[in-house]
Image 1 (cartoon, helix red, strand yellow):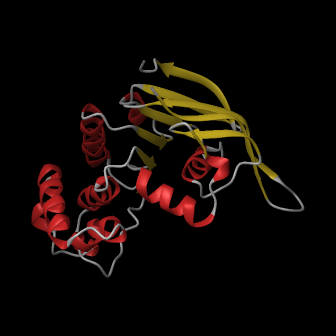
Image 2: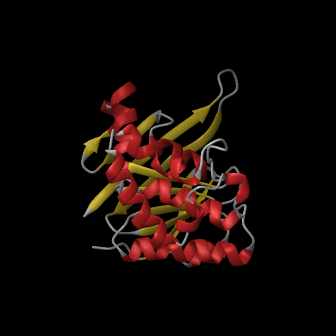
Length: 228
């Protein structure tokens, strides 16, 4: 079943001298897929994520998420939609340095006004699964890169979002730690989660079931087969 559709999306930045970021980009994501979006720096990869997340508005084309026309969502409605449906994992973790691991992971739940008891139960279960339960009272600066990324992943999935977006999630990690992080994503995929991973690394892309290549803001080819 289709979760997300981008159709002939165009996006430019700048005012006097516009720079084209996307020039008719298409993307279809089905529920339960693990898809890599791959391209060189400046190819438009991050713009794709910005469009999907609603951070940027498309200029032309269409965007539907779970059957809903995203052009109709603005302001607070878009913020709530993003919070309830999407989880984000970034290259440099984006953890709150002054907050403990527990508080970083708890943030999405507190925004939903989840009870303290449920927050503790959810975090305890998830951090055990990810192998970071012993770090709950530490601060980000006390973690290794791999541990920090697992905390970021925990925060991204604690709300059980329909879609997980990862922007160069292994870019700040050494090769071995990056492979371990990809194993976490693959395990999430096996459990039925839908993930889009933006990367420039062919090895990371090869661990996904489908790869969409982007160049100059356009699809150039795909590898793999969509789920039914």
